[in-house]
Image (cartoon, helix red, strand yellow):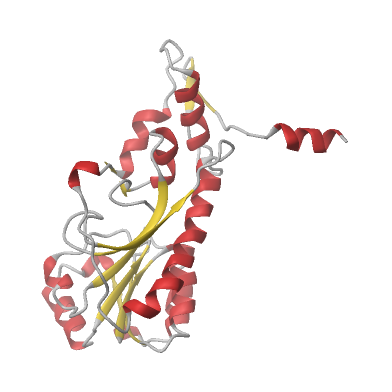
Length: 258
């Protein structure tokens, strides 16, 4: 397979490092522009591609860039933690489609901050490989794995678990995807949940005069515990007081006391 890789973040880098050791031929790399890029220099170095085969995601709507992708003659695309919605002119370039690695148990957990909303909404967490269409995380599912949420998980610890599970799912499944068409399972819209990146702003401020159940408040606080991000806060006069939750099992405390 001739592959164009769409990647960002250190998970994108981990997957790319693995991908270049496979039998597929990497013919192009699409990365985030500077303002949202993470590990872009490492992605470029790992790809070993010339500059003309490295493309900025911000230019994907340009006709000349679409034609450049066409000229790379890709068979399949692979997207990992890539923060751009791909449109039909790009999707149609790939005879075998574009596969996306998503840190949510689709159709639950479409969109952003899936680690946060699985805790806050008490919905199942997991990772999914699916084909991309023009809607957000709504394409046919190839396979998925559930990730258990523990009562001691924070937004950070669940995020790390989802990262590991995502990489393992890709490594297990890609060798089959890249040599043959695999089964597709259409997603059910009625069972879907979706959140935008900005939705966390609606839960971050804890209103000291509002009534919360203990469960809801703890879930918000632990979901938004992810240093160095600021997370949840309350107001004291004109000042914001930020909170982070530390969760320990009784057995851990007993071990510390011995």
